Length: 223
Image (tube, rainbow, N blue to C red; front, side):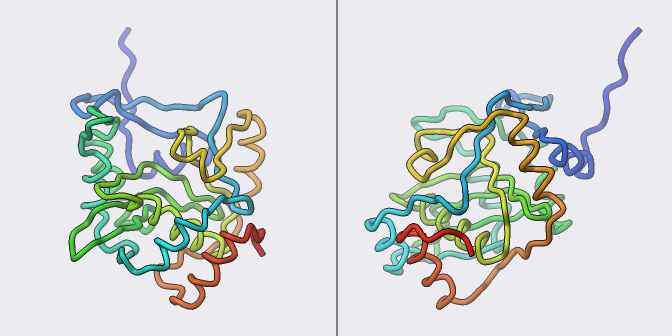
């Protein structure tokens, strides 16, 4: 007897997130999605984010212009672009379609980093209650994705978010304080945060952002 496959829709993805699951494809050319529920989950504690003085200067310098939700399609395409150290990607066309639909529904968001009008870095993910589920980031210029991440964390803190899920911990994320926690602890944190009210802030204002950047660099916990 054959097993009927379940259509993966944007609504199904949202329900999966609530239970600690997230979708990936085997590769850019893969035509199937699978669900992951890691034994160890990557999270980035919002009250212990590590922002170096050097990166703070870059973020405050104005070398990059940062926007939010302005070019989601370009951001997810950038994340799917092969790079010398990443020749393949788990973002296939179906993933792009699903998350673009989530963006239209108001759940998926992007943070974009620009230089001279050109998109050179960014990240995207899903906001659900007080949780932001980070999906992927890309960088075509030094510190471009790092700048986007700092802007993301500042907005999450200002908006009252409680949990930043990174799925896995990479060396790139570890420098900011990302850590692995057991699945049961993650699910407990998820359950406590996913229905909490939070506000996704597209433009909290430059003064509020600059103050939050400095708080991050000083190691000030989330208020």
